[in-house]
Amino acid sequence: MKSGTVQSQDVKFSQYFTSPLTVNPALCGLYNGQYRLMGNYRNQWQEIMYPYTSATFSAESQIHAKISEDDILAVGINGLTDRSNNGGLRNSSISGTISFHKALDMEGISRLGVGLQAAYVSKVVDYSKMTFEPQFTPIGYDISLPTNELSNGFTINYLDYSAGIVYSYLSGDFNIYGGASVSHISRPNENYSGFTSKLPIRYTIHGGASVAVGQLNTLYVSLMHMRTSLSNQTTVGMVYGINFNGLEDNQSNEFLFGTWLRLNDAVVPYLGLKFGKVNAGLSYDITTSKVTIGNNGMGGIELSMQVLLERDPDRETIRKLKCKFTMF
Image (cartoon, rainbow, N blue to C red; front, side):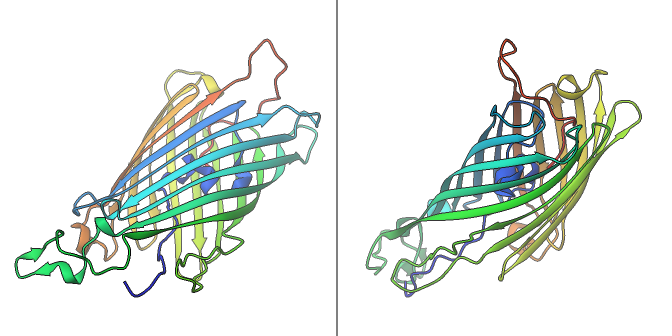
């Protein structure tokens, strides 16, 4: 291998609303409850020999501090792992996030929030999981042959930082939000051999709304645009939630269905179920770009889970947000 540069992209989930800490650290704490647990698992391009697998898990807590009852102070932790090429390239990170949402009115409906995030990132390149030109024979690759590489691979570790801002208007029947974030602020070097190959800054803008339809059903719409100096991606979508138990907020049960569109890349049908404080989602990427040549027109399956937990009811609680399940 003649270069020591790791060329990679940020891990992206189609159900980005269930991995908010990977989108914007200011989304930390913006939910109806005391604690929130969320997770995603993605298996992409199963048609190739070694599919890409990604997973993330986050835990958040609103902090009861001596601030206005309508303000929110929150902390969160997020773990992420990504594996490709049969483990030849492995990417993992652990991050901590803190956010503060300031109420802009007496009712606590409008808020302006800011968030900061610090992450420890580790990227591993394992040559034993790869094949090289010296291993090629007339009948195919023979992995028992030497690679002629000077090492078995390398590992890169670094700290990474993100920051974001978000505005939210959460009244119950009509909720709207919009925000922006900046990732890789420190532009960490991803070259192990002494040269410089800085990770480009990623800019993200996102927004959405949920609107009550009739007495109980809800329409959700959202959009997200990510851009770096090397690439950009835009996702828009709509989901309809049918309430089937007649209750509201964290006691309601909903059946959710809809579709997201990643422009020039994929169509993503989505099905979800909400049982009170537990939400589960299933989506599948149908590739529409030229990548179909390599994956036979197929994409990736993704599973998500969200659980909201309350503080001990015998203790003092933070005032709840006036919102339904909102797809950030």
